[in-house]
Length: 426
Image (tube, helix red, strand yellow):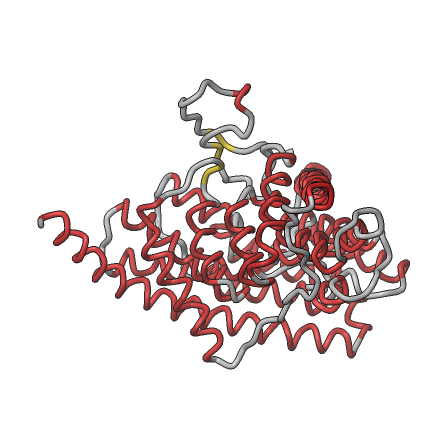
């Protein structure tokens, strides 16, 4: 009975901590989502704001340069603290990253929201480590709990959020010691966001074929199409991560004063918006993501969004990568429907999760997200695409601090030998 008593003690302890952390994560995500909605509506009603993008970038760069250097690393700081705990995440991270992300969207940058939600959630949760004087191993779990709560609440996917906090740390390994608190924080965080009156986009699919085992040729064609689509999704995810890192390196190499990087990047982005004559490639791009499930879109939309986002984030603007990856994946799946014999909405959904899963090296998270967002019938197709895309994306990651626990490719290691190293940055 000793083990059961210890388990009960841990359940009670983490239930209390994770519940409070989830409430904070959900509330922070509600503030973020409401702020981004206001910023987006204002920008779309006043397109002249885009001309101020360079000044917005300079202001954001100055704020971080003089007040936020300790939290500049963002998501990578969170992962590094989980791998090698050193000091508490400064409480200045939530307001700074919220302000920086809202400015990015207000003035017309192309970025997401997940990075902001993760940083706000994890940094708020980390304050409990100091208050409760938690030991190092518990602080690791607490940070993972904040990541799960932030991810789940900003996307409305509690199960995927719980797994994300466990899976994103190391390629090929999942930490089960944080499973219960991550699950609690994810569920509570999602519930808290909804209770604040925020709602998430409905992506239910209308056309999901059954896997036709009785029809060998038809079933084989569907599965082969899912595999081919997954490979393309993985290659594009690799391209996105590489382009974003390379762009960041280019700005750092050629512009020594950090605040000038987003200002110069803002000039390029603003000119590009004027050149293409549309704002569909900036901001979150939710309307285009929704359209990808219902109508045929230009086949180059995914490439345009990739370029705009790599330039925005590479130049130093604040925001996440995941929602742009949803956009890239959904529009790429939409384009692939012209050549693959699967429904457009199904391919859009598969791309939605698979490009993200490959870029973040989180195939289980992305598969579970597909089931939560699109329904159980889409799970088999999306899961197959997510695994294949994960395998085809190499060891490059959108998170530089993500480490390799087990290589994706057996030839790179001896069976059973654990390898821990940082992911490639290019």
